[in-house]
Image (tube, rainbow, N blue to C red):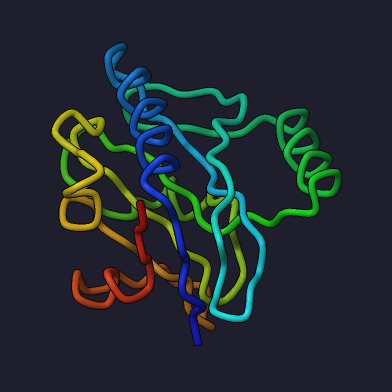
Length: 156
């Protein structure tokens, strides 16, 4: 079972700001939602844009940046609740996305935001993104829009 992610609008706004800034230079961008487990799921505390190498149709996190992320998670006692990244065109989980995904546990969530997040807002975030969950066979399976709104609860 995939835990519910509880996220406030401020985190969505910060995420979209990171994504849109990178998109203005026609580069993909990865943002990690950091959170902690609660009785009712995972509460997202912040959005982190790690140091990354990116182009129009790829991103990757260099080893030093991964070490920095892991150190930050340990120090703050947080976990990666989900990853969010952009695509230049339609939202899907590409082979590169599969290979470079940061979250790798069963039920991990990966949001893909199309068109460098140009027209994505906090109000249409779940409707305009594609959500994928990692299954037991290490495949990223698309989650329906209805299920996405149940898996990701956005609050003010």
